[in-house]
Length: 109
Image (cartoon, rainbow, N blue to C red; front, side, top):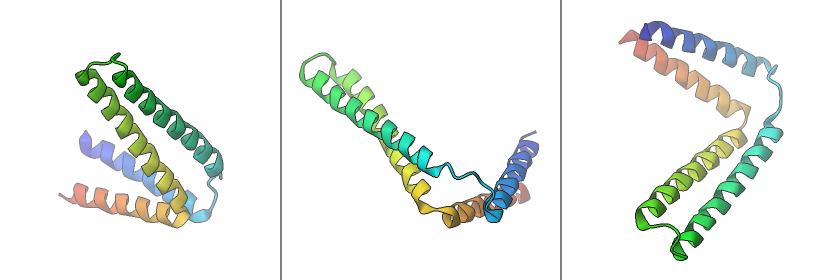
């Protein structure tokens, strides 16, 4: 069952690769970038609020660390996604090709 699911995922990656190579993908990158930038700003503001509330004694150290860690991870993830979006079509094609190779290697084992 797992192998079948991996093969289905590979098929979807192959279709995505074909779309990228043919240039038929809808170009909504700018919209995505704006949404991600907005989300990044909100997360940074939330992190500032968490720090403020800790300083004001609203959060104990355990809750502060949990909330801070969650927001930092979220910020890091959004920044990584923004970096990938900026990388462009060539990088996306290369990434999809690498994923397909990794799946082929996994299936072979």
